[in-house]
Amino acid sequence: MRKLLTGFAQIITCNTNGINSKRGNYLSEISALENHSIIIEDGIIKDIIPDSSIKNISAEQNLSFKGKTILPGLIDCHTHTAFAGSRAKEFKEKIAGVHYEEIAKRGGGILTTVNAVRKSSFNDLIEMIKPRVQEFIAQGVTTLEIKSGYGLDFENEIKLLHAINFLNEIYPIDIIPTFLGAHTFPSEYKENHKGYVELIVDKMIPHIAKNNLAEFCDGFCEATAFNSEEIDLIFSSAVKSGLKLKLHTEQFNNVGGLDVAIKHNAVSVDHLEVIAEKDLSRFKDSETAAVLLPGVSLFLDYDFAPARKLIENNAIVALATDYNPGSSHILNLHLIMSLASIKMKMKMEEVINAVTINAAKALNRETTSGSIEPGKNADFAVFDVEDYSEIIYNAGRNLVTHTIKSGEIIFQKQSAA
Ligand code: NIG
Ligand code: FE
Image (cartoon, rainbow, N blue to C red; front, side, top):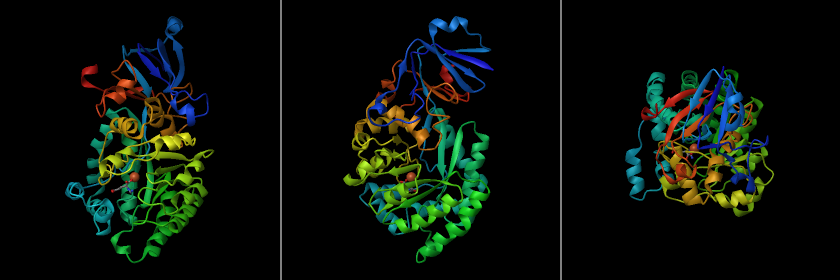
């Protein structure tokens, strides 16, 4: 089935000329085309053509998007969308000055959410998560990573991963499951860290890999969570089992996470708020994406990651919401985009590449998603703006009129019929 998409004020292709990621000066190139149309064939982008040659094209369906701007489908490459319960009470304390790590130390934080997840059935979880996924779709998100990490025992980590996989079945977008058993130590292993690492390595990872329940293995390398030796053991086992790697690291402290992640060729390292000056150059020739999460810095009111320095050092910088109940209760990728510009001084063009092609890179999807280039999936976010700068200027406002996945309209704003 051939479709022709016409009428755009701008087509932001994020074209990569086959490189499939952007770094350095190239990160600020988005290729904004005017007077062009898109041809889709069987859910794949076939061509982007000047409007002057439309008359030669025959298509089964013609869709007009007059005056709108189309981007590659947005990609949220780091979320903890699969959670239960609320931590509004703890947030109240945080507002009053209690530190996130302090709350974690006394058994709150992630463990509060773990209690809520353990009490929830599979069906409860699905019903809680569904509206969140729908909200992402309404923002133009066509690829969404979701981590486990709030079960922290065999039964509940597997329950979460099943829920994430089920959501991938019922929604048209790509939902990518990540195993985050190494999020923190559950209370039953508070005094036996070795025992919990063994549980992950000997039982959880083999089962997850055998049943194809996750694509990535993630961990939290922090003073209050897992040390670098523990992450090393977990990553060695994950790689042996065929899982790809991601790591939460350099968020509050620098405890060797970056070394381990780079040693194991992680697909991404995420957070980096406190990355040491001397480590910036490690991204120069690295294919490991640096995923920055400015929502956490806003929500916890602390340092933003040094985006400009990372870009100067040629890192493949991506952006994500880190949507979770504790450190970034922000289900809004558009707000994250504006924050990145305002607080981390990323240029608007850099931001757009960071939530499209580089976010695809951070999920190992860069050859099929993340840019409007022939041969890639016809995944798009259509905005009711005539210039892409409006998207970031309208901080936190959802101007998406259509979300298109594999050539099908999967979300349409009521007034945009
Ligand atoms: O990415 N850093 C640890 N994990 C999450 C927070 C999860 C939570 O507080 O529930 C994060 O910030
Ligand atoms: Fe996170």
